[in-house]
Image 1: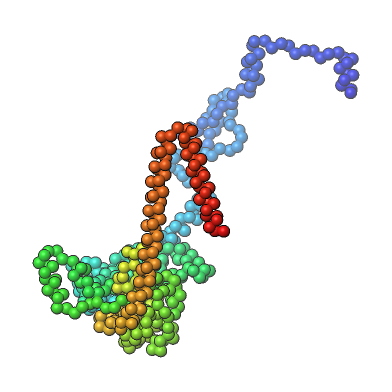
Image 2 (image 1 turned 135 degrees about the vertical axis):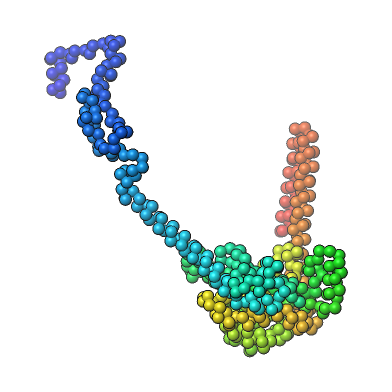
Length: 450
């Protein structure tokens, strides 16, 4: 209010002068005078002094600037705290690299000890061991690691062939992921928390494929003369065939997981046997098969293997449940799985060598004794025929569905072609008739359900 009366009695304020054309440059007149910019001198590595500037210039003020140094004097421009991240990461990477190299070498050494303990048994039973057919066991000297092939850093494989009643043998050694300790620890923790996840373990798995009377089809030849010689050679030999069946001796700790993972074992019934130790059971399609295959030597070998024994399976069915008829084709084979000891001493395998040697000779036992009565054979055949019928029915249903879809596709193409050739009014009438037909079909379906 005071300002109002003051302006009323003192008069109006003087008006501001009109801007002239030269007033456009007034902003530049009010701008501060430029200050010199400090530029480091290339010839000196020390901080600038007053002598470095002209007389009318002053030293720059404000935040301190880092002194100029030559490009190679890194220690003058940095401090240890600039490398805290690298100092943390580099040792960690170094430790992982050392563990990786140690883990690979440890696995390779352990696989070499395993093959050294079992190579003599393979050499006695097979004409060719390993992937190099030109080398015999004597050519490797005392180091048998050349018989193995590294499939991955945790899995080693080898191969053997050249034996009566046996087409070939595949051998696998699966070890811990010592080269990746983080993954190994994670797998162990997850297997402890969840029952569906199996804990990692070190095992050897051997799969032996039988000839089953098909030597002429499986043995390769290079010429007609070799084919004739092969016919003469196999002509006088006894048949290598035996009756199809699924039979197994399984450690009870492995029974549940084995039945869930393998389709062939799911066809059997589980029973304890008086001759076997309490921790082992028989899985068989018939008691007669057990009486024929469970010999005293086999029982003694299983008892000596102890906890290292996992399972011994005689089968002709696939591991995974077949979804097509081609996958259900029988293929006779014998499978042995054993746990590996933690020690790398060859003497640690003395308990498992007897069951391994018996396994290599088991095809001879099958050819000699695996010929069962007609009732047992019919029961086994009936089980397989029922599974085959299910697959055939599923295959026929799938083909019928494909034919139906193909017919509907062709019918739709004919309808669309016909509809394009009609006028707008004719198309409307055509669509109305289709709609009426669809409604009538729907009404019929509803009446049938009622």
